[in-house]
Length: 210
Image 1 (cartoon, rainbow, N blue to C red):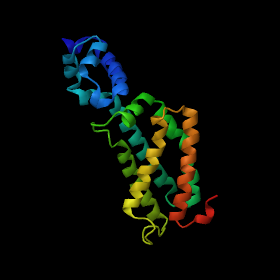
Image 2: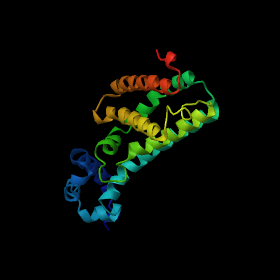
Image 3: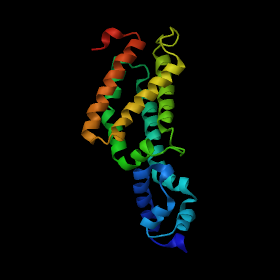
């Protein structure tokens, strides 16, 4: 039976990743993927159900692991540093920059698929999912330190989500532009510094932005 031929599944995943990277999810033909893997389209349906299942098999573990990693880091911060002063909080998060970059660059092709080629899949709003996590945890931090950013009107829930989305979009531009790991760390560090000054303004600590 097709689903018992050793190596076919792995070869399909490799060939599919290549085809999706070149043409995107919507325009990548299953027939071409099967041909490059020296098998038939029926073997794709047997193993993955459909085209969406094939794409999911490649990127789901990486995308979910990254989202879970982000959530775990926020929980760790909340447990250990919930009331950490704003400036120290920024230093703490900036120190995590290399971990964020490494987590994405260790699975670079999979992240390129998620960021650049996922239109039409369940992963097309991956950055939105990260923004939701970021926004929720940022709000918890604001409440924990009794900051008046929200009550004063300097920050709304819509603006919070916009800023969170803009941050993660900026972070993953490094992947979109195919930067080296070293260059990505430099650029993302500057993005963090940029957002730091903006957040200090929202927190009403402008004088600390230097």
